[in-house]
Image (tube, rainbow, N blue to C red; front, side):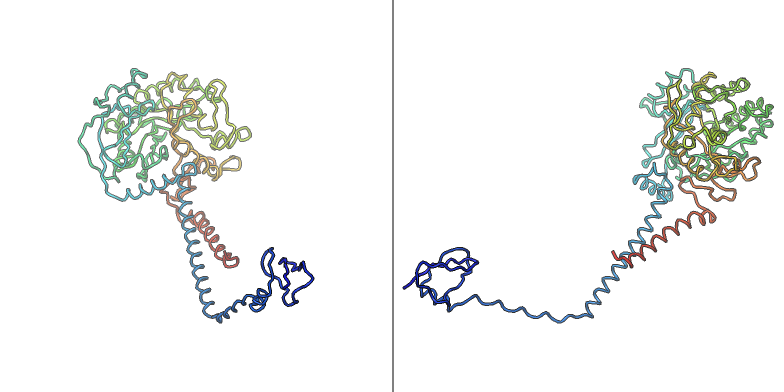
Length: 549
């Protein structure tokens, strides 16, 4: 019996070692990898009978498709997808309106989610009848008292503001202040307990939240100023107001205290009693250094009579008395350290400053970067005047750099006061602003610049920091003006400093919360914003149909 060896590779080559080969039918290729197989007749017969492996069964044919049902499912999914996209578009639209309003009301530098939620909580609290506690505390007449009402009444914070502007909230701070300011009037009248907190003079007095304005409901130093002789339309909207005693009344008021009393009772007292925050009376406006020299002599007597009237009414700690001055009282204001009072102004300015120091009143200065820029636009950087990024100026004497003109004007006033012998008198900017409209030769008088200046001014004051020369003295300023003075003579800019127009509509928005747009303003600003957002939503809906996501 012949035997043979087969190499079962993919090439199916047959190798034999004997002359006798098996029949051709027995030559086959085993589907295995390389190995040698001994082909015996029995094995060959068995393999020939078995053959190859069985073929797999054929798959069942797919069931016929229900095209009608499939189209219905696709249509339902498409409709759900469309509704989801419409819902998301409306949600984006509403969210955009909300966040634009929030950011526009705060200013981008002030924006934070915490401030948003805090503001919403405050709005909810304003509508409730929660009671707060008001306490009367002893303080000299030359000091001002600030009361802060947090969420918990028991932690009410009392802060006294000294005549020189420092904030004092405990006995230790007062002792340190007295050591550095010996002989300051009225400081010995404080009554402190050993615990270091002011002692209550009266019992607890419960008052409704609406009738007691809280300083923390309004960002610091956002104030408006009215220069009318009597503001009968002003109500408490969380904005502090200075009421101006017009120049035409000075001679009459200077005659006697009774005439000053009549004016205060008519133009100040009733509005304070009703809740309006009147923080000061501006006796005259830019008298010293002005062209009406006969008013220079009556300014001080008028200021004394007004203060006496406030004292008789029990209001001297709530309403400060001062007189605003223009840059015309200075002989030189550049650089800030070189500023001095004019020689002809000094004989009238020093007695006035002595009286203000005695009663704890500040020095009022009307600081207008707009007027400085308008007078010399080719040499003054507009960004420097608008609080925008600029190279600023450098004062070589003090080695201080100023990045905005507002701070430079305030420090120039401090320099003049120091040279006059009143280094501790605080400076308050009683007037500042920017014209939103002007004549052809009035450079910079545009709505854009006015909005930019007042918005940046607000951001600057909200930082509650001082100037380069007086970093510890928090800067204070009053915006001029609340309303455009449409009947005022002079250039066009003189009639367009207001945040509001004479009809009560907003001239331009600087981010105050709570301001309401008139129908005229809304038609220009609100409608345009609404149309823009609506157009974006419409385009989104159209494009998602043309280019499905």
